[in-house]
Each structure stands twice: as structure tokens, then as C-alpha cells.
Amino acid sequence: MAASGLQSRGTLALLRVEQLTIPGLPSLSFEVGDGECLAVEGPSGTGKTRLLRAIADLDEAPGHVFLDGAERHEMPASQWRRHVRYAAAEPGWWGETARVSLLPPGSDEARVLKLVGDLGLDSALLDRPLTQLSTGERLRLALVRAMSDQPRVLLLDEPTGALDTASAALAEELIRYQVLAGRSVILVSHDPGQIERLSDLRLQLAAPRKAETREQP
Image (tube, rainbow, N blue to C red; front, side, top):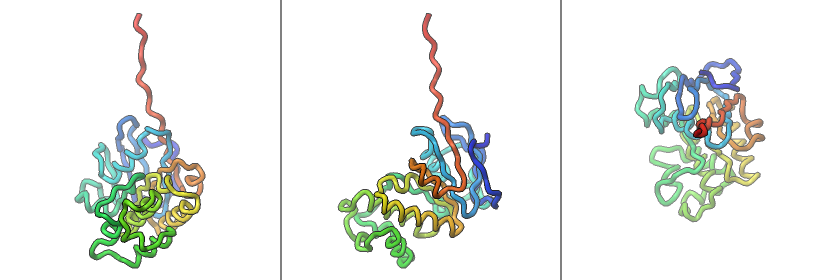
């Protein structure tokens, strides 16, 4: 069953989802092409985050997800996730500072520092204990982490949910640049204005059906 509310511009599909089954939802089939942003909409509890995690191969879900014709289970999970990157609404961290996560050996430091600056952050934050950073600073650094090695697909779960207006505008501009650079973005956002500004396509998820009950005679 194809997802309702999805309209494509007819571009060559980079990411293709076929009959992906998330608990509580009908099977979903859709495509997102190079340089397109798909917004996933729906009430809380409809499975938006679970959909992103399934596409990223973080959670098991029946069905198929293809990247340039290669199915997610045809390559090691770590390789898939290098190309299809999930950025959680509440990102986790390892290490005491962001530098450990953002600048592992072999990384492009210049690119990372540019992204940090693009999001209005001071590079000194990379070496400050993460426990001393605000929620908004950690969220923006998590966006840097997601984008720094230039994945093919970005799965963004409420990327500006904890940001003030100015910081959210900078994040939106960076997301827009990723789309213009030819990457595919799947966006979950509670902000209708943000969806209107960023998305080319929309996928509407319906609220889960409540189980029917019958009164005892």
C-alpha cells in the first residue's frame, strides 16, 4: 500500500522504500530523489520516529529499503548507516567532549569547523565537557556530527525542536543547503511552517486505530 499524501516531482529515486511495515501502520512504499526533502507528518504516536529508525536499519522492520538500487540488508549495517544517517531528537553522546564524536581520526576538521560556525557555535565548545553545554548546543553539535562526513541520506527527527528562533533559522538554512547539494532528507517536525519551508514531498501518517470494545450484555 503506497503512503497517502505523497507526491513526487518525478526525479530519479535515490532512496526507495517498498512495503516497509511499522507496527500500527499499513505497509509504506515511497521514493525520495536526489535533492528532495520529504516531511513525515502525523499525530504523536503514529510511528514517525520508528519509521526513521527502520530506514536507518536501527530497528527491525519487514519490507525493503533501497539506496541506489542496493537493499539495506545487502551490506553491513555500519556501511548502510554511513550513507543513511539518522539524527535523533534526543541525541546520545560518547566521550566527555563533542570532539571525540565529531573529529575521529581521519575526519575533515575544516568541514566540521565550518559546520560548527554555520550553526552559530564557537569551536571552543568542541572541547568543553558535554555536561556543561545547553540542550540547544548539544542538538546543534549533533547536527554537525550527522552531516560532517556527507552521508547520502539524512533522517532528521525534530532537528530544531529545542532551538530558539535564531538557532532554528540557522539549522534550517544548513538543511536547505544539504538538499541543494543533492542529498535526500527525510524530516520529522512538529513545526508546520518549517515543513512548508523545507519540504518538497509530504507523507501523512494516520493515527493508530483504537481497538473496538463491546459492552457485555
